[in-house]
Image (cartoon, rainbow, N blue to C red):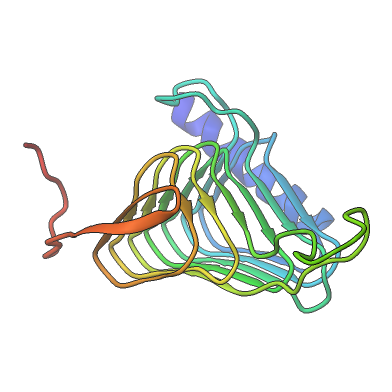
Length: 198
């Protein structure tokens, strides 16, 4: 019964989003919690099939400090999320482009932002915006709790970003990324393994 109620709830929520959210496309079978915020004043948001945008703390294995938010506020800016992704209480803000591949898991407290918000060299910090740079996250990437992914970052397929990392740079496929600033600490042996218990 609970599954039927959740499925109906998700379909109603998707319909509301499609009616109210211009410039937003949502694929089949989404799970979008009611507290999830999708803001697309300008630009475009594209959400693939079977994507979960979770904002409820109940049943989540860790703290969830805020609701999932997708925010695009510049002309021609884009957020693209592939199929089968689970995004749990993350904040994603695009002023240029943020691309997230298929089968990604993004944990609570994560911020993915393609702009610093302010210029670096300034004699008045209250004015001026920096130039945004694209963020690319490949397929099958797991981003752990409370990470920050900064502008210009590229994370290759099958990579894992350890909890609390602050990430800027270009990382190849199968990377274990960790630290502040984040560095490549290991190359993962990924050969179509679905689970690993050790």
